[in-house]
Length: 464
Ligand SMILES: [Zn+2]
Ligand SMILES: [Zn+2]
Image 1: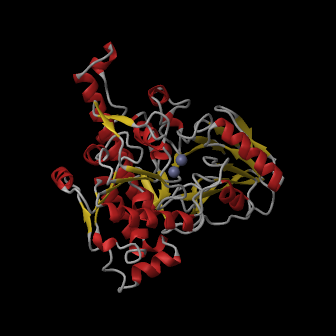
Image 2: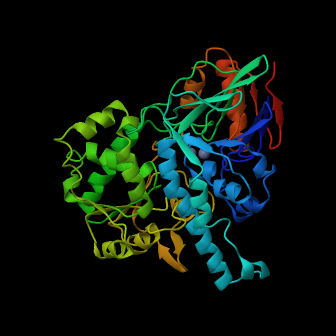
Image 3: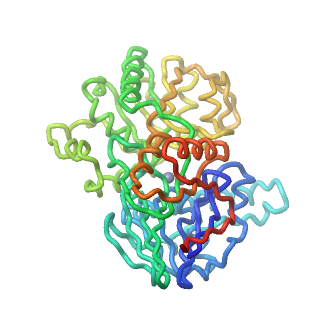
């Protein structure tokens, strides 16, 4: 029984690990590396294993940093099944096709406007056809059912509370007389979020592979965050401008709409027109609506309460480009939710161009903004920003909202690990290097567990 760490060891993205048991090889996640151009170039490097030698993949959730290299794996010879939650299959249809479309458009642009010699022959990392092929390999399971997927390897998905369909994976391994249990966290959600259930408690494991994205910090509490959004909206309505909310298509957008539904009257939202201006967020919202059984109790009650349902009657979905452009004519009373969440592309850029120089408008930043993105410049309160080659003065009121993260903070992660009753070994991955060290110290101090920070390529024997 061998566990080998490949991706998301030096950084947050590119989740990928391997299990070898009874001559079978199982891949845990197959994520895309995201970040700077140099980081992303790593996606083109050959896999550190032969894709045709992998017997099956277990996918924790749809986010591209966990699923985004699956089309490449299939293209390069993987022919086995990909086991995941059914909602993840649905979300991957949206996410992987979008990722392929972006790659195709990017390659075409580089061929048309070459900067280097290589640009003349730029090829996408994978195409929409490759993504479609990868989707045919996916098999969806519900939470809570044990499945033997390979000889000696049985898995069960538990709710990770991170995005719809996100799973904590329990893996039971049997090799001869030796039996072990591994748990792979994927990404762990916050407790008490508006739509999804809390991360499920797992009581037993010999080893846990644990994410650590926010292992070094605490989020602002959600009720305070929601109150803050309410205050911003009330203040904005006095000023007669628009409100822009750059948001991630999956999870954040749906949570915002859910919060708006809850506080519709209290916040005077009937004065506003609300636009969900993102084709991907609209598709993802439809998928969220397909899985009410995955909602927490409050969200189910909210959905079932017919007296509440007429709320958000002023919500407009604007999938088509001309519908999106029409929003530009609105000078006040519009709440516009559009991607991308970090303002490094997408329709939000057009809305920023039309609103950012107007002091009566407001901008609400709701998520993590990576170094080098326009969103980061805005959050850093840069007075002037460049959009599509032109400089704009930032005059709109800017608000940064913590607390809506899809990832648990240090307390959430410690709470989840404290559910294990038999002192498993912890392997911390999926975090920036300094964060992982702080998180390791916190686990050792609070829970006294043995913590390892593996490096890429490290091999661990799970045999006793
Ligand atoms: Zn994720
Ligand atoms: Zn992740």
